[in-house]
Length: 257
Image (tube, rainbow, N blue to C red; front, side, top):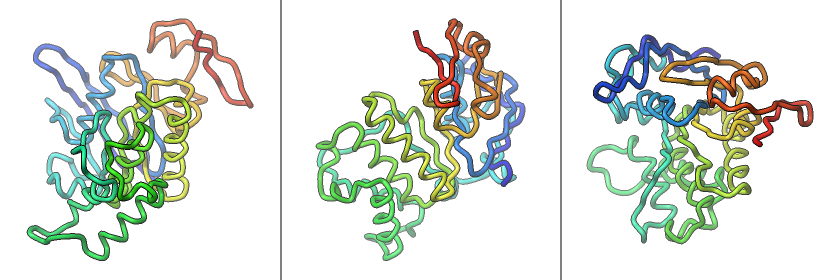
């Protein structure tokens, strides 16, 4: 396995506000990579740059050796699936229909309905995310954790090997947070999906990531395996707070008080 994304000399600004500064980083294939950092550090902007929702002022982002600026959105969607932090759907749309939208990049223009292959991918996505029993229910009737599974299922229906998740546990209670993170881990281990996600919880980052990228002021200040990256000094540097680091079951654990 190599690097799926190669990012070099990246710069981005909103007017005079420089958000990303000369940023270079590679993202490994077949791993769960988590972006962490304080609010305003640039992690969400980096996420949006890699997912083609923003265009860099300078620098390059390569996917499999090709600059993503040269990849059409439809073709990019055949390689990369994205679940954003905020998602909306019509109140009356069913779970199965919403998941089916994930097949849009693969459908030919003007072809009505789903092909046999489409139906198979939709069914598999719902099976993986354990939402088959909700297939005919309106998405608006589901709980927050159930809705998040539906959005992930729609992304899986795209049948890509790369999945981006922007703060997938936001607004969920602890049960559903762990439920979603365990699902993410399964996607990597059982289906060999490369996952890139943004998380706020440091301990969840420690336990559910293969690699962590820590950001501050639009730059990468640390990258590597969680146990190697997370330290009391890094927490101080990134979040400007003094927190103790201990061990639980042989793994580092941040005491958040």
